[in-house]
Picture 1 (cartoon, rainbow, N blue to C red):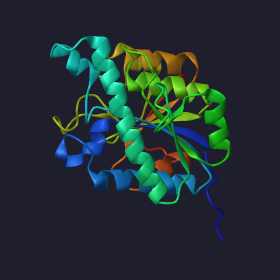
Picture 2: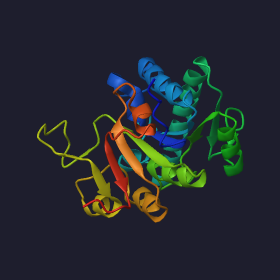
Picture 3: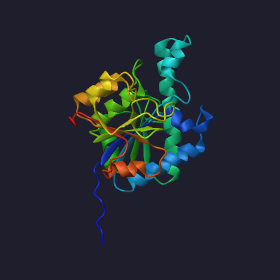
Picture 4: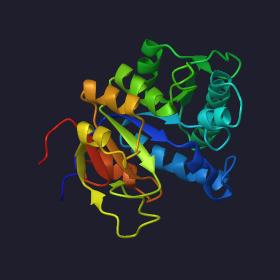
Length: 246
């Protein structure tokens, strides 16, 4: 009888863009997308993996985009943080309908709907088997949810950041626009920072992961079972790491 493949990662932080929740609508939350992602999280949680999530707010409001259109940048960023809270509550509801105990921890205090973020409390929730969702980024303007994800992942000692995308990893160009774009299997953080064509995460987030030796796996969330494949150690997507690979 074959032995089950052991888990490579036992504590992960999954970063999902707000746009992914919109699905084909391009704005708001598409219930089918929400259910799809929630089911993927349930599958890996049932393996015994401790799961934290960060969800962007781009399906509702983007801070930078709002600033370009004339809104004060700080105000626009706070609006974006509240958008992430809306998405986090939606994901919490979807996960709990599937039987998972879930907590939303917000960097901006909104005690009526979410717990304030406290690092030790977050870790304790994970240890008790609860899925935690970090809302409102870092709680500060001028920082993206990518940076918030990198910060929280380091704080809770996650073993990896899983950066969910609509494509199969990092490519030389946008594979949607250029079908001949070449996929990278692995990259170092320095290579990502030095290549202006690679825009998988902002430079602050990348630098934070590099300084703390936290790997990032960029993968396609829309392929069923991909999160499980990553936590079991299967090489999918693109690994961004400090280790030299050439």
